[in-house]
Image 1 (cartoon, rainbow, N blue to C red):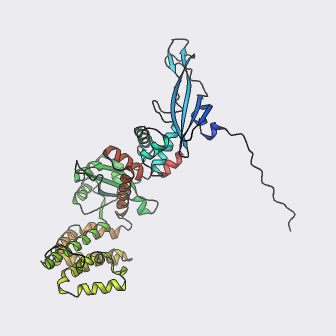
Image 2: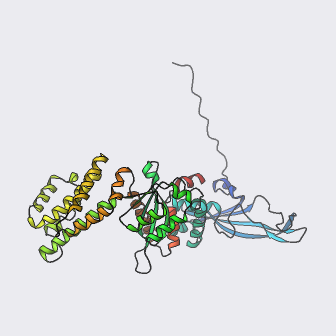
Image 3: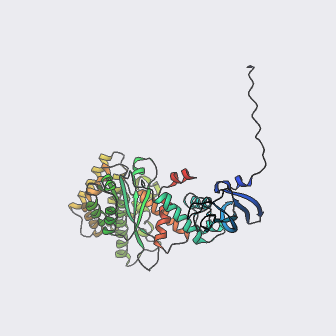
Length: 443
């Protein structure tokens, strides 16, 4: 056995509580003189530590004139709000006679009712913990507008207006997004996503901007508004089947490669399969599908990938396609499954060849009865280069764009809807702009 004994750990020193440090009042340049603790809030009576006696007019030193009182909302303790009653002096200049208040610059922004620490706390709650402005205002026991103005102003300043926020963007995703479900006004916007981190596997995709409208001109104007360096760095633009986005890309960033991502190609083929099933259903029954109609019962089964089907599901499909009345659905289903299989092929070269064969076969000729399949063939042939470009640029997909759209839907649910698009844009950028590292560095 070793004769060396391990040192006894030092006992932590117990000191008297310091409310200035505990409530983080010291960082505001204040000192607590007294306190009142209520069940739902705490009131701290404070005074400035350092004077502000330099005359703002002539620079001479002033003397005490009288005292004024200001109230601030500070960082809460748990769910209990903290209010500060600050008594500060007013000064009179000995030279020019000017009277001025202690400006309390370290406590809060001019005319703000929230301390600087409270604003940072509110911004963290909104961005990191996905709280609504109403929930934050309820904890602080202050008005919704006070919290909203403070959070959006600070968020705009330290997160959104960062000079290097658009640097390093090489892969851009663009899609439309419905920001409100009402009949008044335009309800669609264009979202622009940075897919570079997702492609390079360095982090999640992030929202770059949210623009009112959904058209070629909207996206083109946004691209043209960016710096020449930004446009020169963009290598790939991932999009859906809307040709307006493709035209805008070709004109604003002509050197970039346009990619129609698999999500929208498969969704397009799935839509044609669904329309074929509905048309055949109407032709056979004279109306919409009922609960016990074979085609209606198989509506979800038809969209399941072949490699995911169970034995029972395969048997159901064999029974469904045994009827000659369902031949058109079977042909469209076969094309749909071929597209999925091409994208799922681990060998990208083989997948590209397989999808090329599908596009060529649809272009070569489709029976006139298969209206939906013919439409699909024309679309795939028209966007052929964009569709096949996916196999040359692995990891480029608009899937993360759809994920961010889902986060924005969740944001609207948290806020119980938005009526102001400017507020929605700011909150969306704070929610999905990828600001967590920057925000953590400020806390």
